[in-house]
Image 1 (cartoon, rainbow, N blue to C red):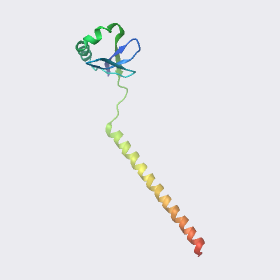
Image 2: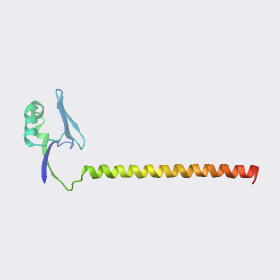
Image 3: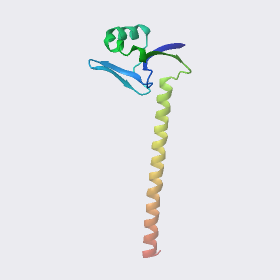
Image 4: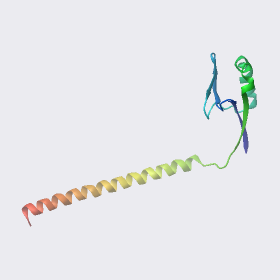
Amino acid sequence: MMTNLYKIRRKSDGLFLATATYDGLHFVAKRGRVFKRKADLMLHLFHNEKYYKNNAADMEIVELETVIVDTHNVIDILQEKEEKNRTKEENRKKADNAYMRELRRQEYLKLHKEFGS
């Protein structure tokens, strides 16, 4: 399934439109506002015509084509994360137990050396 998306780019510096406000057009690098339908883009242009008229020669519409490569079930992702967290917690508990055993062993050796058997 392919989808077309639209952006407005300023030719002079390649920046994409971020937003249009009462004080003019605002551009940002690389990202910018995405119009999912051509009708939305056209409506935006007509509502903000006064800002675009003066700079129309420096503006272009970029049409992007997106392709869905793969899909993933949300439940699978959540279960993977849960399993990873469970494993992480089990490993932390094992490490804590090993650390406590080592502390007890060191205490035993210290007492054994001090008092003998």
